[in-house]
Amino acid sequence: MKISLQIVKNKMKHIFICIADFKGRRANKKFTDYMQQKAKQFNMNNSFFANASGATTHSYSTSSDLLRLLSFACTKTEITNIWNLSNSTLEVNGKNCREVHISSQLTQNNRNKLLPYQIDGLKSGSWNNSHKALIMNCSSSFEDFMLSLMVNDTFCFNNIYSISKELCDYIKFQKIGSYLDQFLNSGGSFSVKYNGKYISHNDSTKHLPASTTKLLTVLCALDYFSLTDKITIHEIDITSGSGSKFYNGDILSVEEALKGILLESSNTLAQALGRATGEKIISLTKTL
Image (cartoon, rainbow, N blue to C red; front, side):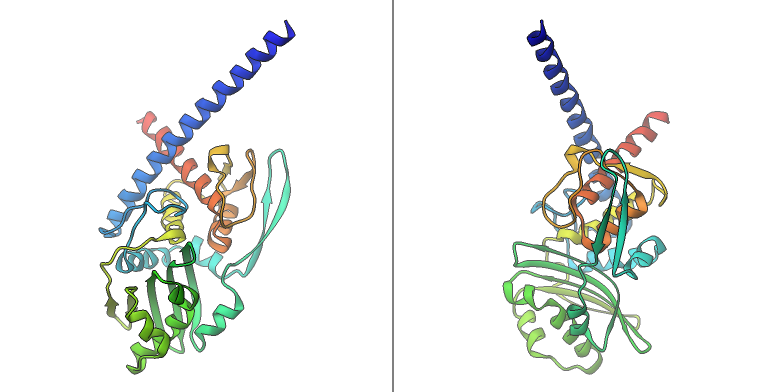
């Protein structure tokens, strides 16, 4: 009897896991559909986003589309307030209550590479040490730049901040530095807004957006959640790669999740926020 009861328990557990997995996949699909809809609203017509975190080779975007994404992100104080932080402590509730200390991926060394330009907001993404996307809002004195760069070779990957600095210099002084020169001959692309002007190179070439995807994820989620709302991590959300370790059953406020996504580019929190948003969309659709 004990053996048969254990078998029943195991089968029931397996059924519950399968149901949760099905619901999670359904919610993820609903969310990625909403991502495409939101991208179209932003006139990002040359992009496709396959998941919430950007940890995939199935997504693509262009420097011009990512510049549009940055422009909309800069209008959201929920995002810009977090960009002003260098570190934070996340309060995690649930079965394993704890504090998680996080730091921004933007290091002081990389900030120094941009001097005299000050970084006011930034999101980067990378794949396999060769593909990198960088979208950034920076300023110098009374001049403001919005930049989007996408690179696909190791040299440019390793020197993207130096390239960004020389790009700003080129726009101001019409002088091409050595980093920028190599970038221009590498097949990379950029789009820049400066003093009402738009300057670009290969801006319709498609590249991997990687973790810059997370900005779109956050903008989509803010259509359905307030900062004080709570989300729970599910097994299906847990993703390797960037970010601190989170576990099935962890509960965070949306504001805490945004900090983890925007500061340390947490893949797991991005997936959880996307799946939770998908569930919210499904729930609201049923009530109509």
